[in-house]
Length: 431
Image (cartoon, rainbow, N blue to C red; front, side, top):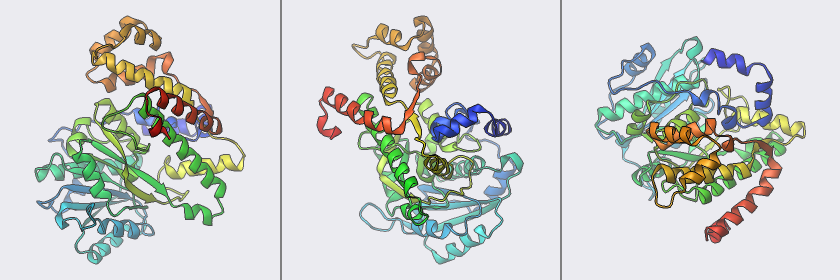
């Protein structure tokens, strides 16, 4: 799939339209993030790369509760700050976390610099931090972040199970990211409260953009964040999720993403795609009706560099925003009015799926614009609501989204929020 997708991305009008839209989530909606993860049975045989990774790591300590994974390619410049932040983790009261409760595993993959040597030196610098490093040269078409992160998460999952912690946490971050002092403690708190997975708030180094004279790019990034946070608020009003209540945010990316080993097994592991593997994993979680908490208490600070290590990610997004700002063009985003309709229909369909009292099944079927018999057959065939909703998104004409300029969306969203907050009796929350 990787070679075929690379060819598609390298040419053609579909690629041009995707670039104009300049938002990875939409760009990949019908491509890489739809990939299914390979099955990950408890006794899965290890391939050669997985075996080499496993053999370079010591056995897990008995007190292990969280395994932090970091894929790294030529990251000598950024890793010191990343590792220092992980060495300074505290609980929510500001006390150091128990020494053996978490570990950090760095995979130096396809490096031309001394990334691995740097990690070893930092292991001596922070003797209280359980820090491991492995080195791999991933071959050809497998030399991408999806493969590296999959290898790490598989190994982390197995280590947690080895010490009898199926609800232990696999926590992912990136080599150019500094986690907050309570990053791990806040993740633990959300998992303890019932979440299967946690997406943390990812902030970027604004000073980097300012120093580079990219104030226009900084403003565009802030407006995009405002759009997505307003969308999260509107979604909460129209289809609230008990496991992901407001206040929440919109991010669930590899720089700050965690889930239990149990949830990781259930979804079959991380889909092994060239990029946006984090989006693909979260799609798997939704497909299995697992809960994903977008916690404002879980925070990291990541680099605003535009020469990132992946084909599509934050660095790609920043480059696209810069291109649009230089051309004085407005980014396109999903139409908020259509999003609102989509979320309303999702709430109504979920009520029908659950046979909730008062669910208006006939009316919902009419609004979906599909033959009733076809929809009812899918409702019977799907094992989870996530599977049903995924099918609806692919087939219902009522759920299709068009694009509007970002400036237009930012005018429409506050009005939609006020209207729906008033209708639900939650005007104070919208303010």
